[in-house]
Figure 1 (cartoon, rainbow, N blue to C red):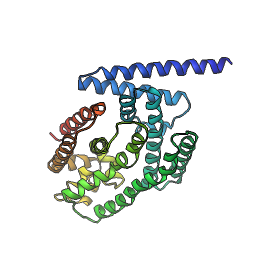
Figure 2: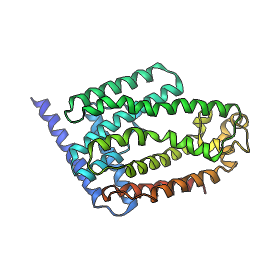
Figure 3: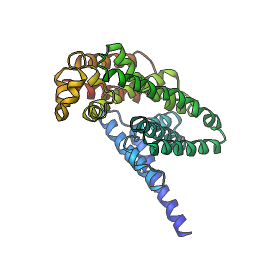
Figure 4: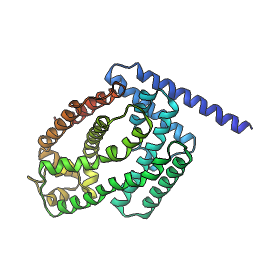
Amino acid sequence: MGIKSDLGDFKDRALDEISNSTRDLESTADALLFVQRMVSLSVLLDRFDRDTGNSFPAIDENAQDPTYFIAAYFDTKSIADALWVYKVVRSLTRYVLFSDRFYETGEDKYELSAKQVLESLVGFLRSEGNSQHLAYSVDYLLGQFSEFWTFEKIVKCRMLEGHTFSYAEIRHFIMSKSSDALLVYSKVLGAKIPHFNENVALVLHCNQALLDIQDDWEDIEEDIRDDMPNIFVMTTLKSIPYSKIKKSRHDARKVVLGAGPSGPISRLVDDLHRSIKSVSIPENFAFLKILSDRYVDTVKTYLQ
């Protein structure tokens, strides 16, 4: 009885912290402060997951985005609905990240982990009376996105063969890489909250593309080591062959950046920003455009 009571008290305290942090976001007009408070909320949500036994430490450092939680709360004003969305999206993100590692490394342990995450999620969705339709569509949604990994292998082969990439190819690659936001995660919001529409899905997709550009910036050396496509590398191949980049070893990042990839990537960032600005979204989701501006500014600091 004492243990159960302590766990109940912990969950109540944790939920109070999450609720207070979320309400603070509602009253935050300053963009920088909003992002800082998002980070704090992300830490609370991650801690709640870990302390309630629902955690994958090896993968969760890349699955901490609270955007979908915030979108659900701002539209429904329900912490319960927001936590439900967070749980489902985080499980789907874990599945994608484990699967991504499997396709990159070929190690069966990652495929097994992905299957376990998916089985647990489907079981949870089937237990939810008003969410069973997601249980039966999740395989289809993930199947649509899984085509990216086949496409990524083709891009990798072309890169190793010395192919140079046009702007259209680079844009298509990053939009395909970020399409999990459009094809998978946004569908969870569409199933749960009242004012979601396709314009919101488009902004989520473009925001994810901007985040994936940031990830490619941070992963330049790792991607070269593993021969994985990276748009900063792909944009330099017209002036420097991949074989030379690969041979440069510890100076590979310096070689790539010295070749000046900023032109095509600046154009891509501007195109994404224009797409975001060109659509109207319900006021409850206006924070997504605040995030867009921050992501654009961050990427442009890399390109200066």
